[in-house]
Length: 329
Image (cartoon, rainbow, N blue to C red; front, side):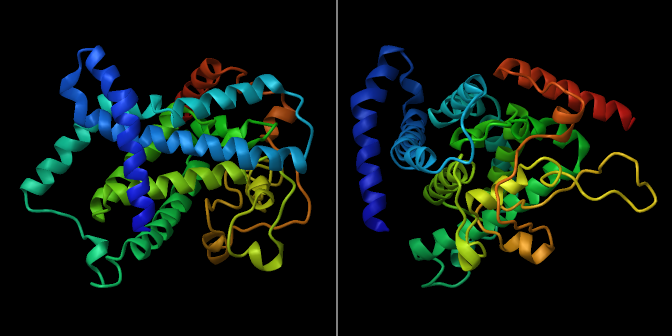
């Protein structure tokens, strides 16, 4: 673990000194040098993720696709979403908008004497070992992701945003980052608050985010693959997650017995992000031995338009959210 950390740090320094630092000086923004170095780490993570996606996951999609790709325009939009996130554009926007607010909030809390709970210190000699701490944070934030994901499917206004992600009927590895930007902001805020509350070191935060995102790319892949009886209980496979995106099953709960003809209520199955344990424990797991069609029911039954390009998807998402909020007031 330490060797990997040292290797990453060396690569970050090399990328910073050869590319980022000269660019920052050329733009006359030397006062942002420390921030630029931190951003270089995220850029390096994104580049490494893209390499794995292209060299490992893409050949798997060619090898055993669930379905042929016919809507190339929709997939191109997903690629752009991914590049916006992995090349640091989204994180740069967060830096200039939300980071100052977060710094002020946590600075005030620290001044008041609150410093979080520091999970690393729970078991000295064990939880402060880098590899152990990484596993601990990975499991903790996967449980957090499960809770967030259920809320995205349960609260109407949040589902109105999250539906951007589920409206993709041509799933590929690039679909993971197909989200409404406001949805991404909400998730990022929750992650940062929890990370600060548990005293998560920045290096561990980057590592957990990087691995989580890469596995999510794999799970969204157009790949006919399951992990077998035992493997499906340990790690979320492309088939398990595809059922989360399936028409009806993925985001709907059964109708109430006294409302047999009403609209299907929000709900669904397979909310886990990395591990299926939370779905198994809380009764939301759904396993089948085939790969379903994906999308949202009203796309098929009523022809509802969720947008073709990124701009249209973002605008329609806000309109849906506003409609839901107005209905509740």
